[in-house]
Length: 254
Image 1 (tube, rainbow, N blue to C red):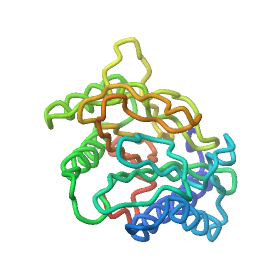
Image 2: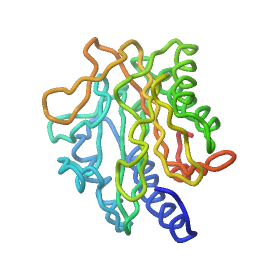
Image 3: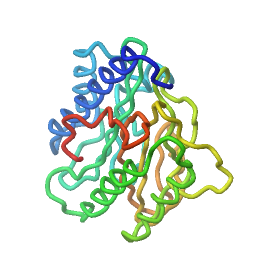
């Protein structure tokens, strides 16, 4: 999507507020002993308060309002009545939604309670690398160069990146052009960020693995070597200078 009117910008701000606030409140609501289904239902309530509809449910028939991934899971984890949150879990929540014809995507990893398993540095790296990456984006910048920046920053921090999960365009649907904004340098990708375009930028920072694999449930992505991955994501508007970070408001992990 390309922002051409003030009404479109306001529409994107409103749906971004819905997903950002849902993500923030879910993070604060999460407690050890709670099921991931209970946490997801809470997120669904927040979305409905805004009049927003779950994007993965609406687009793909996903069996949950939000995606909740734990520990070795990377993305698209299915909320479950049988999965309990535990102290020290590495938790990723991904919230995307539609409101009045506009779509936004927001995600973040965090350690639940005490950092019993030393995931904190991985989470911090993913968050900080996303922040630095966003500062690199403006109209005309090559998407491949952003991927190289993210990969280089991950390596400097002692980590790797997942190469087959990517950021994407967003705005009038959940996934739009550009369809791939990777976390690594792809020399074949000659596309550039366009001023006024709306994109979702993601960092998938890994302890070892570089590829994600479908778990077997049709949705959840995991590592195949016991690695851990932290992800952070913001929906932004590209400008001539620093981007407008639509999902930034009230985010406790910025």
